[in-house]
Image 1 (cartoon, helix red, strand yellow):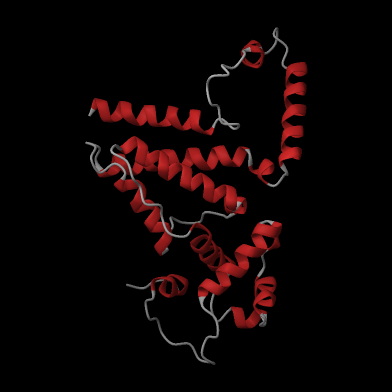
Image 2 (spheres, rainbow, N blue to C red; image 1 turned 120 degrees about the vertical axis):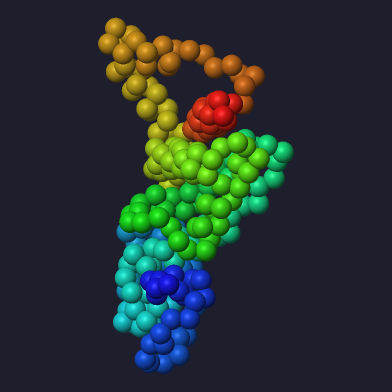
Length: 237
């Protein structure tokens, strides 16, 4: 089976030897350096030359390890996400909540991940580990293999979408985030008048039950709605 060189290296598959000196670094070193740059300055701060400089060698030397920036992104994602979470729980729902929250936390720690172009399905070890972990969450359900994959993708898309909406807030201090939220609420109340946007206005005026533990971005509530839909499919099966 022919694999791209970056996957051969990540999986430890021996490909054809390349001429030149013996490699000085591991892909994990390159991934760590690139992730550090992205964490500090966003995905735009990552370039082949900057990664090479951070490691103390030339840009051309970096091409002995990765053939392109897309390969560099693959290495970065493998390093940033790490191994998939171990899912505990007596039922699929609790296991899937654990998976979704771990995925969310990974995106919160490295929000630049949401900016990485998705050219093809992931095939690196840790990425497949996350896929396997999510699919195993449904092991005791009557869902077919295709239905389990669809359910996993639905949760994946929800988590990415929910974090995409708040990615700007993740780069702000708590004070900046609170001030931005306050300004948004004030402006929305002013602009979304009841005569023109009655549904929005009603939502802004409805008091929240202080006895309910709401999360600030509504993540848990939205996730529960997604899981309710999956439960309906399981019940129908």
